[in-house]
Image (cartoon, rainbow, N blue to C red; front, side, top):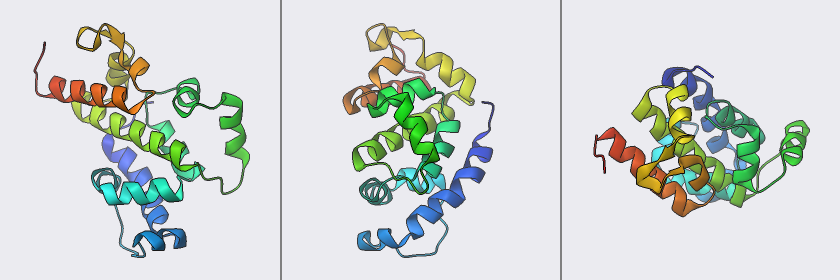
Length: 167
C-alpha cells in the first residue's frame, strides 16, 4: 500500500482518540476528550499500557494492519492465531483483542512507524524487512518480529540504518 505518513496519521488519529476516550480507559486515568495523535500515542508509554490492558479494538487493528508491510499470514503468525480466526474477528461487532495480542499489535505499529521514518515509504520498508540482514545474523527482520527480543533487535538495526551506522 502506498501511503504517506500524513495519510496514515489522518486515518489513525481519530481512532486513537476514540480509544483513549472510552469509558473503560477511565480506570487508567484517561477520561479526557483531548485529541491524541498516533505519534503521541506511540511515544507515550502510559497510553500504550492503558490500550494494551483494555484491549485494541478490531477497528483500530484493521487501520494499523492496512498501513504495515505485513500480510494477514504475518499478522496471524505474530499473534499466534490462525488466519481463519483473524478473519472471524473482522465480522465480530465490537471485537477487542486480548492484552497479549494488543501488545503485539502495538509493537508491530511501532516497528512500522520507525521503519517509515527511516525508509520513507512502505515498499522500501517491506523490502528491508524481507531481505536477509548481515547485522541480524543473515536473518530476515520479519523472522525476528515474533517475540519482543527480536523486535528490539530489529528496532535497534533500524535506528542504526537511520544514523548510517553499518557493521
